[in-house]
Length: 136
Image (cartoon, rainbow, N blue to C red):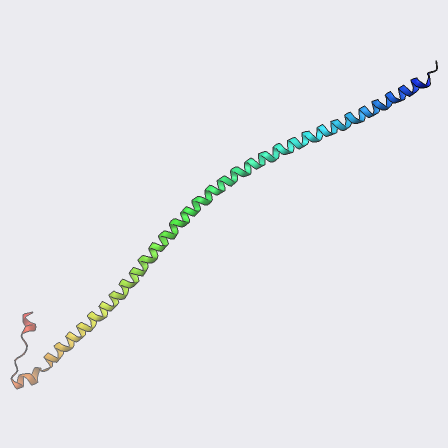
């Protein structure tokens, strides 16, 4: 049985269409696989993004807490500096008062010595000794 040219041509077209169909199906399967891989990559990226966002929020919270702590420490430092400045001023005032007291005591001692130094000469001259010191 010989086939006619038309039959051979039809078979050839049919074989060609089958080959093209297989090629298209293969290409479609590759695209489906690639799409599936891309969807999986996207899901992983979204999960990572979510994790990173949570971590960012946590770090922001920690940063806010540290900023608050830093502000409190700066306030405390300013208060301590003010106290230190007040203490330094008081220390200078104390030193001044101590010098004044020492000078006053020295002046009183010198005056006492001058009054007491008239001693023998004052006695010889007939000047009575100062009795206020004894009464005090």
